[in-house]
Length: 292
Length: 345
Image 1 (tube, helix red, strand yellow):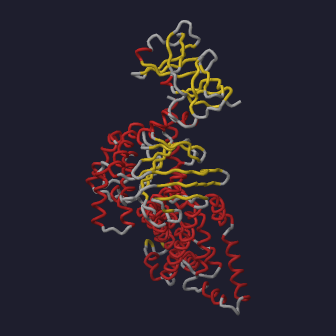
Image 2 (cartoon, each protein chain N blue to C red):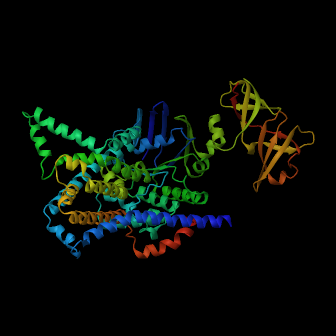
């Protein structure tokens, strides 16, 4: 009897917690939506949403951010995947070191990071004005595609991408997969691409998504270095057109969710099993176990 | 195709995995590497596969040193202890993986994969993914995959140890059948003596990175060359004895010739198999039966001698009737040479 009451109590609590969490997330969202569609003096209007596309800077800042995100994902995966694989296969003792290095950005606030960056960007050209590196400093700050932001975002994304990839590599036996592929005649590079990476799809997708979400929402570094990615544009537009800026925020939230769903769908293991085999597989599995 | 390990040494930090291993696998034979964990058997196999490099020594295939050939060009098919199928590929694609690496055409790949799955008895599982198959089925597919490139040598690294007992026996018989059918030189690593004795042409018993003895299963069992082999393979009794130094030993009131190192003298352990020990009910006997276990044709008696030593004896069941727990008995040994080991002080 006590157990029953107990379970009911737990169920009641679950509902309460879900409700409280739901309210916490949904009420501000609903208020934001209401704020964008209910304009004082004009009543219900979707003007804020229709105005987004024509607002100056929307398309360019969103495109810039997506480009930066793509470059960041490529850089982060390009750095981390080989490093993690090498540590796992060749030097397991380096794994803790790798973990500490990848976690460092968590303890350095982005304001401190950007202070360091702007210091170097100011100092560099002065001292290197007579060398070819001067041009490099100019190029990384090109407003059309600020490479320096990609570098900063990559550092900031390391902890997230590291966790996602490490969890994925724990779930498969990377060493055995490598060795099995090599004994089947695959060179080390082919073994990585054909046997290991396909089984890390989920982890690669997770790492990419977390990086994308980080870049979409990053404000501090972009603003303080004087560039205009999406988040900076939203804040900027908020000063002059409050409704428009909130409408953009609501849309970008929906966009992030949509991307999350796309990534989740893409990272699911492939089930291209023919229906014939699938129908046979399910009931046959248990008795076959003892038959082998 | 012969495989030869020549004076192989390998250390991992302070641990010596191989300490001068010399061993040859003959053309077409199934050679089992048997030994306790940490004896270096897996390291030796991985050197043959190309996953480890010897610190010194050579690995020869058909007389040619292959130490510098990378793993993917070695022509050795391998089945691993853990399930090693590629989770993202179906059984057929797993089997065809090596052929794809060799750029064999799609149609030929499919045909060969089907043929190999047929060979291991799983033709209907071609479209299944590894997670849709049982452990035994996965290891069969792994075996088919290892054979797909018609390797010169087949390497089996404890392929049965993750399977349950019944599947294990079936699969090892199948491995043996396939190996004989294809006449492929096979090196089979195992820590299970029954597995080694029942499948291999010859068994190499290893200890601390060295070879103790390499012989046919019957020879290994009947005339082990060292006390370690004697105890590791089968069950062995240790009876206290007194070696006289002239090639004989006094044990259980009998005087028996010593096999092997005849110069041993002083207190020794005499090593005898349970089936070589005879026990008979005897009112005046100083030994006591402490337990009996019926095994069908034979009954295994556990007998405590007067000095407290425990002896196991396998007696034909029809003769064991009077020998119940608590009965007095006499224990005797046949007049045959016995193996002795100097007793640690």
